[in-house]
Image 1 (cartoon, rainbow, N blue to C red):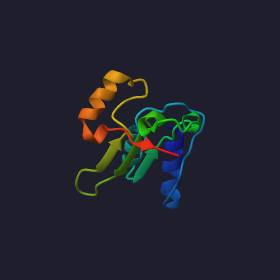
Image 2 (image 1 turned 90 degrees about the horizontal axis):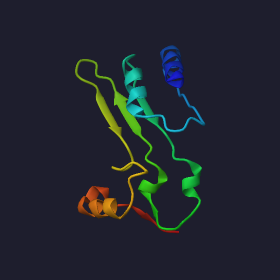
Image 3 (image 1 turned 135 degrees about the horizontal axis):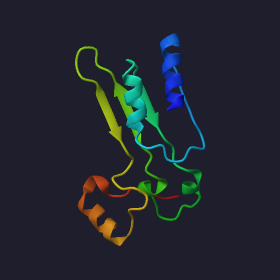
Image 4 (image 1 turned 180 degrees about the vertical axis):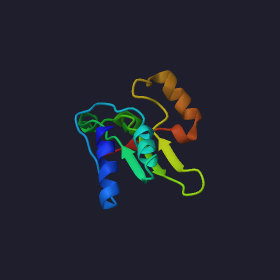
Length: 118
């Protein structure tokens, strides 16, 4: 949240700002940070990257195995409600894998894993 507060401050002074943090682990919902910026009439985007260890092997990679980094876009409304897209990169958390879960994924077309081949 400190990076968000500093970015808000800089955006108000300069018109645009970028904030970043590293070595923080999972930071929760990206929407927390975007909604905080929107409360100050700022357009905002927040995303967390996956950990590098998810990219070390080419064996049967699936997008959901790269982590489930949250991302959010927020556009404050001048007269109407804001527009917020608050999502994750798959419908499951990292720990929700296995034969039973994969069987459910097959029933939901949008949840089918993306295969990445070398």
